[in-house]
Length: 452
Image (tube, rainbow, N blue to C red; front, side, top):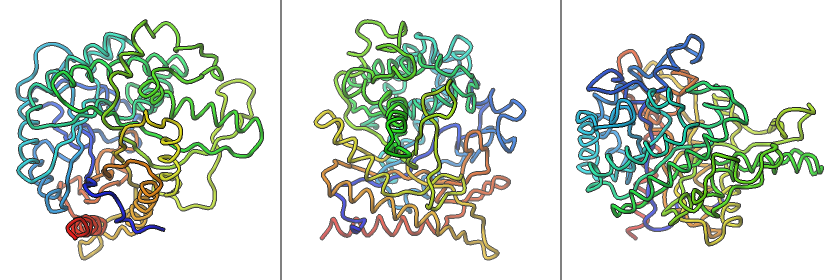
């Protein structure tokens, strides 16, 4: 194993959060309702019945959270901007109070020596746009570009780079195909237009951002796909899953075309939603960086049922699991990154790990400390794997762990804890965990190494 500090000079260390998961204040200062406000209010939609109405109250406590980041010694903070806070209905004139909040946040970050890395869309679509079709409607892509222009014009003098979308695969599948996340639709393969329209929105927003001199990234949730066996059927199923999860949202960006989805009965270019010139817009003029969100590999077998999807997920055995039940396989990150380099070659831009972390069932001990050794083990193992990938020639530029603080974990509510900092959701008291001190010391050691 390489020492996890064997990473390139200038490597950037950060943390990530998302607006609906941390901000709260959903009815304040002109913010409009999002699809998550509506979805979370449905009985049974969220496991523990919680919502993001208050979450971590970051909207009011951002200064305290920035101080926690400063004490970590971070280079960057990846956060998302709440679209309904900027445009309550997803269109029209900007809400001044919403822009003012992100003004304050960005200024506080810069004063602490931390570079802001905003994500423009992290799943909280204005409900008014969903009422008009959401990402199934082509018009949403154009509304997203207009919103991006508003935000960039306000913050662009202090923000050098932007992430357009977060995990469009997860949003399409969980939100539009399976109904596990907002907006709660269960369209199965009829959700595919939501893939194209998100990518079209990325392309339109990227063009607007580049006109303003900004760098552009996207954050994709990617997984190494392992075949359950060497049988022809299992290999074909794994290839079909890889095309849907990984290639559907990467090939158009880097190769200018959609992958082969014939296993799903889908023809070339996803059908009528793709219009002439769309793929050229999505791919041009290339990404400045690819954000990779990695949590675990996926093992795939041929389906046992003759109808339905062309794959079935199989268990990964003999490995530890997080409190979420996800398998812990650090080397999967190395394999994923090397695989991206081999697949895309010179078309692959520099990579930043924009999310990586784990849920741990941690609570304060009687003395008030929070011991989360499983999280330290998880982070250490994945950083070793990241260093291995860098040693094998992958251009990696930064690592943003998920997450700074325990937060509202979507359909799991407040039950899953990913933070370096414990949050008591009754009092909003923040308590740095053992992993917080470990990460702080790691960053300091990295800086000392650079200084040698």
